[in-house]
Length: 179
Image 1 (spheres, rainbow, N blue to C red):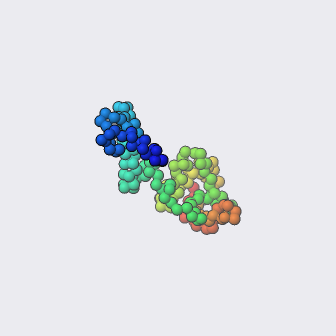
Image 2 (image 1 turned 90 degrees about the vertical axis):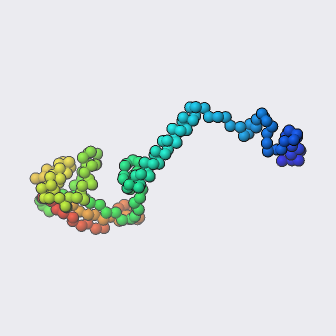
Image 3 (image 1 turned 180 degrees about the horizontal axis):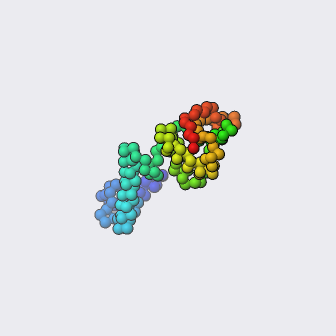
């Protein structure tokens, strides 16, 4: 700013008024605000209510340790990813002693909701174990008469940077069920 600009700004102020105040009835457009329209106020109030409700649900879910997916899927983001992974795998043992993983079709809705039940298989009574194994064999399209047994194995994998793939490092039998 130049000294001429300062003088011009000082001259614009009414005599007897200081630079920080405006004359009565005068309007300073740089500081003027128009009152919000009724629709604007309603939209702002609704936005605040929705925001508070969403934050409240997330906080309540965290405090109660309830996972109400998709609002509070903490588990998805709270697990540390390491180069070691462990999973449970069903293995079909044929009468000749050969074995192969029991591959269930992931597109099947039943498989999507029953895969987590592998972990409880060992603790079930024998009759329920057979019923579950028979159902999983049926889903895989395998006749139970063609199977000697089905094993549940705990398999440990390690990420191999050289190949860019998971490599099996350990396999432990959890339980074995004869269909």
